[in-house]
Image (cartoon, rainbow over all chains, first blue to last red; front, side):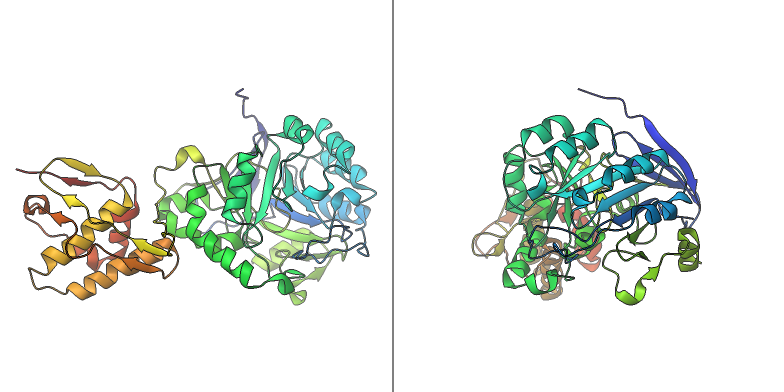
Length: 298
Length: 149
């Protein structure tokens, strides 16, 4: 079935004209050299540090002792940003936040587009909540952090196939794991994340992870014609991805360095940072997002 | 100058950074290829016979084979810097593979290039500019054509 790709949002952001489509496609158009954004078009938002999954490589170091962020304060922070921007909501386990629905309805009311990342291990437990998010269009994209190479539940793939993006970590997972997931009928949108030596990822890193990363570098090209494949900046660097592209093609596909069009909010600690990997001294307490962005970019 | 950067067909779900590049299956025409190691973790380039018949080669291994045989049989005849060109070829392959794996080139008795297929001109310039060599071998749109008179 072919569905029309309609414009969800179109706005000017500094030197860019940004357009977000219903397929998830996002374009940034500019006619100046070294264009700059006036605000983040995408914000990585950590709403909780609570999680009951014992992922040994969790770079957020989330546990059952983790706290939830204050949603009201977070909404106040976001309110000054224009309509059309995207939020990538995560945790911890964001589904465990007691005010998640209230937050998502408010985000929608603000004209912003929420996406969420959830752990594969939580799909069954939170089935009704996830379905509510989809039915009410409270989230657009659903990232599923893959823990085990296994089929995803059909209730998810049948109702939200186009929204689901599998998140797989280079080093934790292998190229073969990706192929196996595809063979098992998983949605064909894959995000490959670089391995973060951060949080529990520091102690998890061993020879196996190192060997897996090396194998990714060599075999990643074999995935290019198998699915819609995307990478984060760390993955691009670790997998030496640029070697496959001409400069012209790279300039069209590469969305920009971290903190040139995106930033990070830790709603638990009530702090801003360039990315979730930013060190403590790069994090600043809540004040005004636009001022924070401008002071960092001017 | 007008530039358009595009994230294709997915929303920004990444809650640890951003989707910084998306690769679409149907738009792979300009994406460079690579070579994969064998079970012994070596990159083995076979010895192709580049004869008089008209043939077009697009694959990376065939084009790498041509380069290796060219250096072996034609550079040598011209007493040029064979070893330096070989080093450039091997490093170009390793860089594209992404790892310093052993590269096994065609042995003395395998593969040949008929003189007609050298087209009365050398391709030495490829080994002077590694980026050009990389494009020639790994760009699926770069074609090696062999032919007679």
